[in-house]
Length: 241
Image 1 (cartoon, helix red, strand yellow):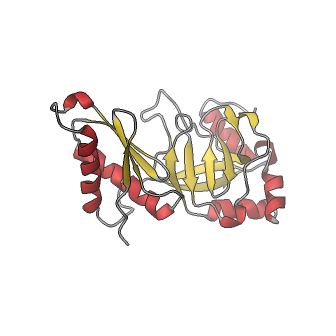
Image 2 (tube, rainbow, N blue to C red):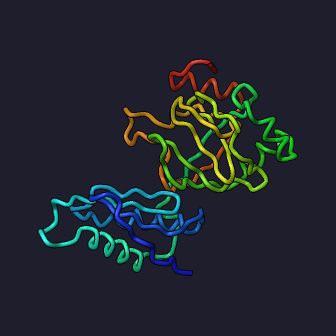
């Protein structure tokens, strides 16, 4: 089924927003990621940035690049629609597959027992379901390097915490509703923490700084606390705080 043409609206005076859906649709999101790649490949000189999100895509442009009297917004809208018309069928050929080690030990998973109880599962069953599901990065946002990951097993769909934490440790793996997030550094958060990865999800000295990007396929791989600490030491993080 072809992706419907989006509603395209101004986003300030130097961008347009293509709105594809009012709700999260994984198939539509996959096409948005594909569209973002197609727009970048065209290397249009007046495009400043392409920002895919859950159900929208923002196209930022340089108004100074246009001849006076032309409409940058119309040109951006035409480009988006043109790319959509020639998008090939979705394929995994250009998709990155990332394995993310996760320690689900109690010390790093303060909400795992509560999530298990709410889902009427054992903690071991929660871990098994979380690692078994195919996951995909839907968008990166909120703060730099913060991935929103779809594909959570429906049996693990729980709401956000009633009271957010003032600080969540970097690398924390947390779930809410139909998604998983990975906290890139210590920030406030209200999702349910079920584990932690020893990998640096965001490092401004690295290129690219973010470990995960939109469209990446993610496999969560369970590791022990000893393995977590070994990973952390290798990365210069020391023991579990």
